[in-house]
Every structure is written in C-alpha cells, then in structure tokens.
Image 1: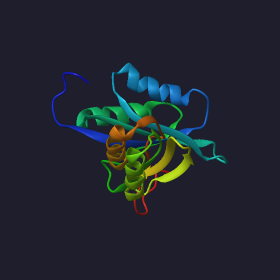
Image 2: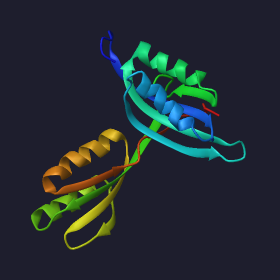
Image 3: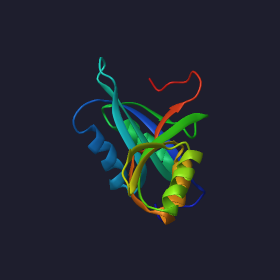
Length: 172
C-alpha cells in the first residue's frame, strides 16, 4: 500500500461466501497478491442448509483502497455479499483471547487484580501460572496485554474479530 495518498482507516469487512474448498484461499490471495495487509481474519459456517460461511476481515487502507478491496471481493465467484461494517454504520465487534501469565509472588496478585478489573475469566491455573479468557473490543484486549507484559505475560492466542451490524441491518 505504499505510495498511497489520503487518510488511512481501519475497515471491518464481512463477506458472505459459499462454504466450499478454496474460497478462503482466494480471499487471502486477493489481499496478498495486491500487497494489502490483513490485521484479523475469522471464518466459520453460518448457514449449513444453504452452504454458506461468513468471513470477517479487518484491514487498513485509504478509502480508495477499501473500495477496491470490496469491489475485488465481490468479483470472486462464490461471494454472495460484501459489507464494510465500519463504513456502513454502527456495528458490534468482539474478539476472544486466551492469555497465559507466568508469575508468582506480588506480580501474581497484581495479575489477578487486573484480570478482575477487566472481567477476565480464569480458565486454568497452576501454582506458577494462569490462563485468562478475555472477550471484548480489540483495544480492550490490547490494553490488558500491555498491563500483563511486565507481570509475566508468556503466551497469547487470539480469535480474531467477529463483527455484526447493529439494529435490523443484515448481510444475509
């Protein structure tokens, strides 16, 4: 995306596709082939009767680049609909993270206090470690991770963003 002019923005794009082999590879290929970055990617079947899946992609670019991405996604044969949730109005976006913290003594207590403040759930614990489950907006998870780093943050597994339009608007 070098050489672009204009302001860059983050876009959360929902793509309704046929649930068939190779579709995800074509979507990813569109991004990599044109040098666009994917910040987050999630995919799962949403309608088994009709054989459809939903892909949610978070990317960044100028308004022109985002429009290009949407147009190119719409040209992929098994794509039924493309929606820029960020550009089309209010939406809800959440992410799940599993966070392992290895700590003892005072840092262990601090980690527990921070987890409580963020409403992180303890899903595994040993004498020397915790695995926290945290859901929320990406910036909430990032803030939690920033606070856990000096306390013994050891490993992170993130689901990627799941997003949906607010109100009565749907992609289906």
